[in-house]
Image (spheres, rainbow, N blue to C red):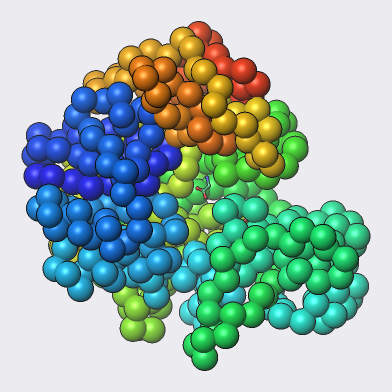
Amino acid sequence: MKVLVIGGGGREHALAWKIAASPKVQMVFVAPGNGGTASDLRLKNVPIEGVQALADFAQAEKVSLTVVGPEAPLAAGVVDLFRARGLRIFGPTQAAAQLESSKAFSKDFMQRHGIPTALYQTFADAQAAHAHVDKTGVPIVIKADGLAAGKGVVVAATPAEAHAAIDWMLGTGDSATPLEVQHLACSDGRVVPRVVIEEFLEGEEASFIVIADGRNVLPLATSQDHKRAFDGDTGPNTGGMGAYSPAPVVTPNVHARVMHEIIQPTLDGMAKDGIPYTGFLYAGLMIDAQGRPKALEFNCRMGDPETQPIVMRLKSDLLDVLVHAADGTLGGVELQWDRRIALGVVMAAAGYPHAPRKGDAITGLPAVSPDAAAEAVVFHAGTTKEGGQLLTSGGRVLCVTALGESVKVAQQRAYEALAPIAFDGMQFRRDIGHRATKAR
Ligand code: AMP
Ligand code: GLY
């Protein structure tokens, strides 16, 4: 079977690495891929961009299954186009992907279907948004409506921060450089910048990702991300500086509540609204001290870096599962998991997250491991191969991931595997897994 993985980050390297381990695979193409996928002989990078060109390629190469990594091609309708051409693809349609691409859509959806989430209001008018902040007080959370490459959320501790975030996202006031947001057009075709302002929730976050075929849903192992740039969960928000699986905060009781109160109502609600959900569905959760889960957000894709530890624990044939999911035959499928803990540490470029530098030479990298049973694997993200040399080419550069019998052992193995790797200006957190080691 020929498979196409769309994307070029750490998540896509991990997905392609796992899919390539299937005995049914003949070739895994990655578009565009990265330096890691370029170094694995089972994978082939193809420099293709744009949904039309991707569909042309899948057709010409007789690709049996396409798996979409990032949100942008989903929001651009890649699944709709492939399906219209009779090509098998796993992911949500453009309409279903609004669960991620529009905060306003997703909050309205949750409210309509009784899915627990933070109280919120949506504003297109800056004056009304400012007045709302003055009335409600802080802490408060301001979110841009639209895809903002992970930068569209400000948790404001002071009124000044909240007001500045509103102006930054709406391009009002004296905001010199407004946030770049890919806004979605309203049903009448107009594009109106909007912000969602929501209640600040306290608790512990977890990532809960499932595979959905429109009707059936199969939960993946739980995980926990580390969003802040620096140790002790300080510094700016990032795409994620490290992750591990499973997340101890998701006890069996919390797991059952999440499935019953959040995941199943979302699948049912989407089907009822006429936009059945197929694809990975990622619920970002906040779990309070009493074990009550609320949905902070939905993503219509796997998490990055959550995917890296999750696939290292997955024993089942991922390709088989995704084919079932794409064909609507997930019912009865079960997943086998390694009982060990997997933990991944992200190594980021100088200047990440605000202005990552590119082009630094990376040394000390181990050979890319095709071994599905390896205890440690270095997944690449922002890397590129130029004349045999690996260079940094993006914010998050690598995710060094390891398995261990405990969080401590997994942590130790990951940091040992990371130690020989170096590039100018590299940054990584030294405390990935700290919540789990405390919980134990
Ligand atoms: P989001 O992209 O919506 O997941 O938001 C990014 C991050 O902002 C989350 O991972 C949380 O750490 C934080 N956050 C978002 N919404 C809230 C909220 N209502 N209360 C507290 N923290 C939040
Ligand atoms: N690591 C968070 C995300 O993928 O959205």
